[in-house]
Image 1 (cartoon, helix red, strand yellow):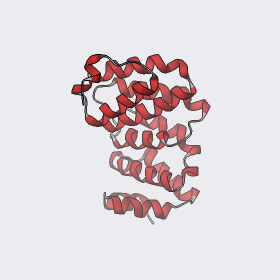
Image 2 (cartoon, helix red, strand yellow):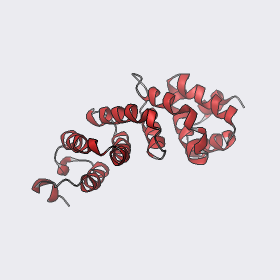
Image 3 (cartoon, helix red, strand yellow):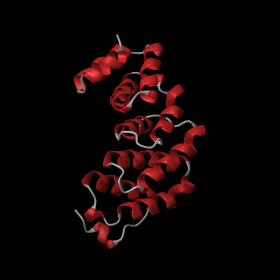
Image 4 (tube, one colour):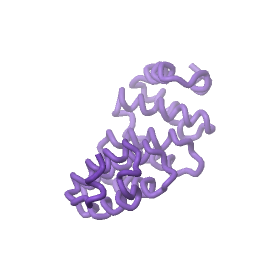
Length: 184
């Protein structure tokens, strides 16, 4: 199969799953997919991101050697929103290696602080930071402050982030102010 041509042929969930099943647990096929994800042109990278995510669901062991490069890819200027969304989704379901913990933490704090970050990216970043705080409790106050400043008052927040913020603030053990509590 010419993987790049197959990726460009169609952009749908059935087609994405078909390619992910073709990759299977084959490390060489996965490496071919990752090369397209990391170095392909814009549209190929966008579509490959979704396939990589499904491959991670099917065979999570394939991700570990590529995790650092995937995280670095999210930092590139001008990448399609699918890249950070799918990479963060993978990271949120993966045990973060200690050597990448600082990089992942910084990335997630940065993405939460950017007003233009897509909602799904912010939600995954919050999930990851919640995992990080469980390992590094000293970051608890910083995370609370970022959530508060990034999202302001809950009544103006998108539902997905509102629920996620409430869950996190509850876990962080912080008392919410009256304005936040009055939104239901």
